[in-house]
Length: 135
Image 1: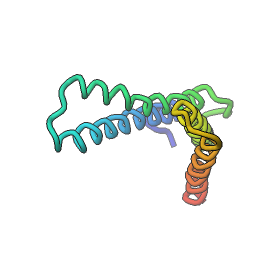
Image 2: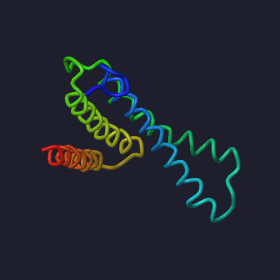
Image 3: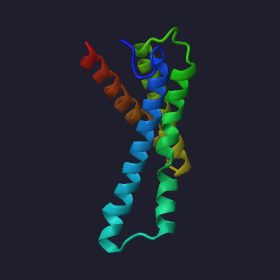
Image 4: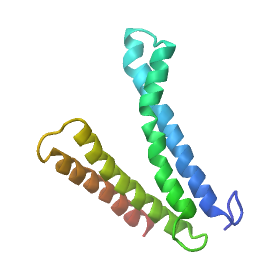
């Protein structure tokens, strides 16, 4: 069934991934700005900019899955294959970023490995959920 972009369902998936990242970024920034700060005092423009900049990693996290779908090895306009590719890239990124963040924070000993395992399990829950919901 053709979508908004006719015979280009990959383009739809790429845009959906990127727009979802932007929406989550706005939601996170809003939660930080108006959840905790509004109770104390309205945030000024400098605070808004800082929070938006700090939360921008959410949008950046949507880019690798979108790029993988757009130029990935899945042949043809197979949306299902693109979805699986995007999920796999996202989970891999999730695990990698958790290790990088733990190391950057100076986490001692095996904590980066534990962080990777927790994020891998969470990613596998997402993948299993997709399998369960689509079959």
